[in-house]
Length: 352
Ligand code: 5GP
View 1 (cartoon, protein in one colour):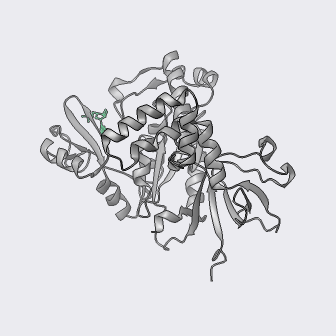
View 2: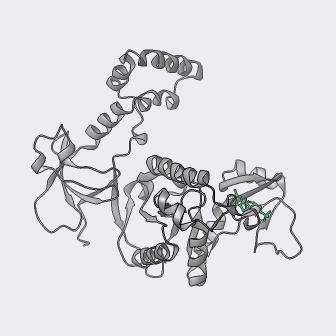
View 3: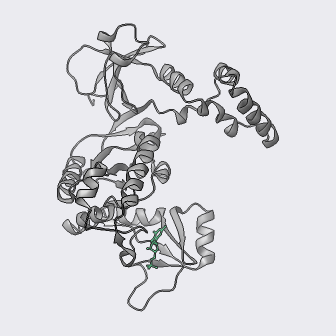
């Protein structure tokens, strides 16, 4: 029997330091952890404080961590907007929803609705990342590491990193072929640069949720289909995909088991130093539209990275800072090598 059988593991979706927790009964007994850490649950007997230890830690001593319910509740209280949100997703008729929404907005000034919402347990806990139950996933022998999603702000160097990876081993890595509705150019062939389809078919495919993402450019549609990811994986290649972070949640399934890497910019000082003579490609791959970086581009990149990290940080499996391209590339490569050998932790919900 596998040694993990009968054990319960969770992935932490937030950083925790017991020394900064006013509520913990005994700080010395607390277990500190970082977002992304895998913890083994030793006891859930107490509704507020669970006992856990880092996964793989042989020592029998467990530490206290806030329970999921407790952590969700206090996080929701700190972010009152979460308390208002569930009314949007409830089963009420839309007129009813609008009324209650307005009511709670008005009452928010007096703090009354917050209390009422909490009492009725109506906040949407999905928006309060705390822990996710995970399980080790045993890969088939021939199976390469699934889908790797690269996310990061415009200009951070995601395309260069992707290209370097691809040319480092074209047998090993693959990228998706996008769909477009524009006419094929003479030097292009169908299925290589793009899959060329009609506007009508594109619109039908969008309606049938066949795209992970799509956009419009000069009156034509462009998009990445789910099937294009499947065909890369079917060749037993690691599929490299760069998308907006909000699309990641649609890919989090057992079929794709995405490993999400966030490419993060360094400090603004380092950006100014390292990108002085570089050019920014603002739309996906349009080299022709490349322009030198401006101070606003740097600020925008930092701001956008901060927003991505605060909104989607709990979905990132790895963060790589792209200060120096070669260093970042080596770190990326090392991450990939490790991925092929180490245990995958996948959410239990993917197995159902
Ligand atoms: P072109 O028509 O010159 O080949 O591409 C023009 C633009 O289409 C690219 O610069 C990029 O902005 C956009 N594009 C290409 N592929 C995709 C895709 O898969 N998804 C989206 N949203 N846009 C794409």
